[in-house]
Length: 271
Length: 257
Image (cartoon, rainbow over all chains, first blue to last red; front, side, top):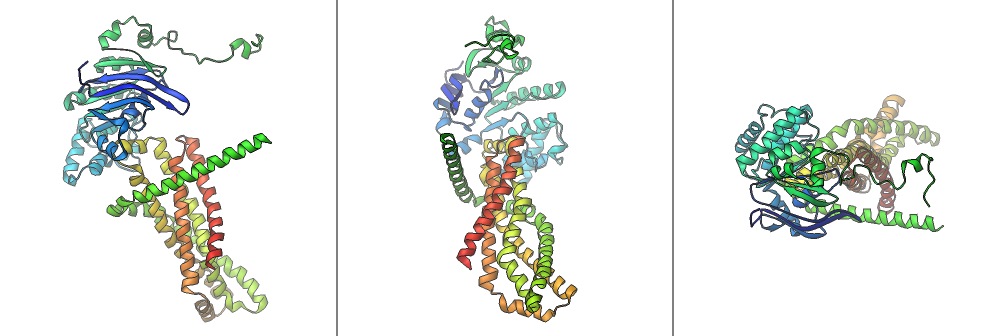
């Protein structure tokens, strides 16, 4: 990877109270690259995104984006930093009391002094970019899941961000919507030159879209590589993810304190 | 015994922590209220939802409370030959106590619970997070306009509750029972003091407005982001508001009258 990464995460550790989530995470992402972070549910992927957006602060380590220490920013600096960042939430997080137009116009109205006529043009451009021109007067309740995700994407890119964070962008979508969102992520990255991090379970689209893939388990990065390297990897962690196997280094079953036999009374309890 | 003490200690610490959080939250609302002044359309929109849409329940309730006061008051006063004092009884009961307290209780049930549910759902569906990530402070954009809308709406609603109540008492006493109209209004005019009764009643409603709206927005913001969490936060808003209104009413009455 390049000498001066756009995103540099150094020895980051984070815990919710007593429960450790991330342990000694190191991650470097060059400018303009799309990186996928994969792993099972609860492995700390979304927490990592929230550390990058400054919603959480790590208990240990450094989070550097574009040469700035995000983990040390005060709230005024954080809000300034976030104007150059977009985030697509897992279920869109559209404002339900606003129309489609007002949702996409929201970051423009709040963060710029542009006249309403310019905002209108920009909103229509963004809606056009996600293929939903003509929906501007609709309420969010009238949108399908796939449309809502595309509107949320249009809103996230409204300010042409230098950094895009995608939190499970493919979850709960039908195959056509999923393909459209994947195509848009690729197209927008190429057009805007945005550095992007995509947290996902979707191995197929990750390998198709990403320049680099990281695998997480138990709060740690356990493997990484280009899509080609991932596909050729004999690493048991990577192989388990790629094949979706229940058996492997990542445990499918929760480590129960008692056995099935003990629970059903067929086996004497251990003392 | 020790277990009971441990629970009491944990409950006290939890309550104090929440009180501290609510105080800091109120401070944050006040500090981030500049947008409400710069963009009055945010405030007007919320006043429509909190105030204008509460008009029906407030006015109809006020009318019936006044009518009941008229009936009960007449039945009692007539025994002492003081039925002419009905206007005074209705007006003082409403202006000093029933108006501010009942309007606040109705406001907490109708608008307070709606505010908590809306903010709680915005939290559960990551709308508040999305706002923060878009460099927009949710306290300034979502909470402060709702808070000030509630604080400004309740005194107006209380005044309308009182007007409707006095009209309800008039309808029962004068129109239905046949008391002298002149006595109803003249006795009221002589007995009611602008400062002691009308202004003090409205000051109460300002305090209730601050308490109820703060509880509503705080419970929504602090709600666990699940369906059950939003539901219990909404319940807490109504229950806590009711208790706080009644307790505050006692304290304010002791100081004012």
